[in-house]
Image (tube, rainbow, N blue to C red; front, side):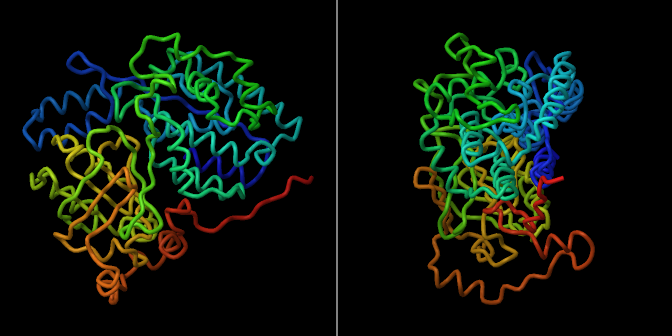
Length: 442
């Protein structure tokens, strides 16, 4: 678990360098590159009759041709890119594929850096700062990174004792355009970025446009601006590619991550914008208490354009554990409804999710959040421009419906009971307790 390892490094505050294992190369099917995202969406396409089960089987056999994490700008590649931007990893270490010879060079480079960090007692508390986290968010929203990074960055900041809240993601998205297009919203994968210079190319462009804090320190002991000057990555203008733009000619004027609020999500909810065509949606909601029931509903062909799907009791405490709703969102997208059906949940999504998929709704249903008051056919509105997720109910009606809300815990003993009892809100990173901060004195 990548953020888990970084949290451990922060908590222990020992000299630490983060090294990513690398992502998988894309597979090939019918003359085009594919990833695991195409397979998940293929399940929905089979249900819709768009492709045959034999074709889906062929896609499944070819989507993952070797070792490595999922190939798009999904959660693993997002967090590897963020590790570079935070200063936890050497610049340029994230993008090389898992089976590339460069991985040996990156391992040696990280090892030498780790020894230097030990010699200099250079610990995470020495280089992590509020500015580091703002840089990481700028990178995330500029590349259309995974919504899971919102949770992970909030949790990492909490571990580091740095004040960070969900509204910061909106603030940075307002000033930082989306300049890169990778799967799931686009067609390209991490290896494509690697071939033109990796994450430093994007960081250079953001820094050139004064969208990075250049004085933020890194594990090298140098600033991120100093590291960019030292390795001198190529400029975006040097490439004639359709998946990377300059800040002056962006893919979207605003960053990809938005935090929605409203009477369904007073503490916030998260969406990643992968397109610009359908930014307001209103329709009757169909409510499900768990992912499996929603998946059966979608696979049975009940979804129509304009629908809204709610999956609740999948939050940090209600699940417990905040599962990913990847199967449902992929099935909806595979049936051609990525942009005309909205889905929201107090659970999470995979980094491979696209379309009108809103996660991390807080407060969650288990603790009596407004999402628990929803009933089938209530009218729900999603308005991306106004950052709104709401239901056409008065506050009094929501309170009335919640009067008898007293759910049974999913677990009463064992480790999962701890999560039912102790998990915090997704709006604060869904952390349990703040942990113990150890000093660095011998």
